Length: 300
Image (cartoon, rainbow, N blue to C red; front, top):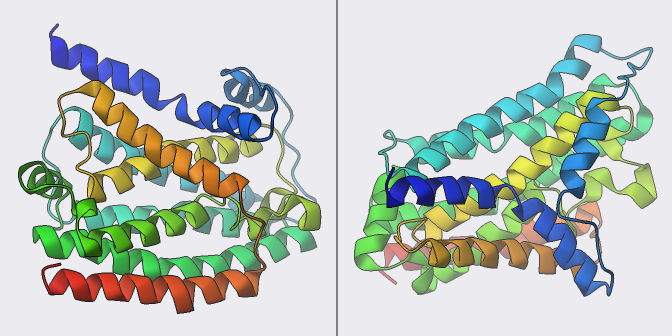
């Protein structure tokens, strides 16, 4: 039992409350008290205790496997990031590339689940998710090239160590531009406003999730909670040195800053239409990401 054990245990506990914290911050912005910190977990337990209804004309196998597909990818990606950041264990060559691929699977699971349910609104939501995926993946991948260029590595542990020794990628011009592009792309990956067109409740009920209920719906909700914990840590590792600082308070504040940014964006912007989102990602954010890559190649 030493300092590092307690530090890692503390991080693992704090990590799980960031999604409920988002609900509290949202409530304060809207001049509400908000739910208690455990409300998200209570909602999950309630869903897991309900009956799962299978649509009559659905593809039963795919309908039931879809949420588990997304959860498995998130658990693997979370294990890799947790191991590297909290236990200072080396990753493997190309783990950054693996993470980029893993982060596309939750969106694919949402798409497959929506189409498998045979509900017109679910299919519409899945088609919107496909368009959104095609939109944000380009600027996201371009922006991820910036830390790779600056550090000369595609291994997470080496990227973090480089930032500890030479300063965070975020503090460079190219890093700042790429950081903005990644933040907005991750906002879309998590399906948060203004990029929640696939699950627009006021338009198409819950989109791909319309026919889901009980534990299967609970797993999709759990996937969103996991994404809200894992994706900010991914951004932190690529651009802000990860949890390389031995001071737990500084690391938590950095993580908390990114979470609050996501929450503020979600609560201060209206939902975009699909065509508006695609134009934003392809013609604005992709240009910013491309400029960041060029500046990174120029050493800026």
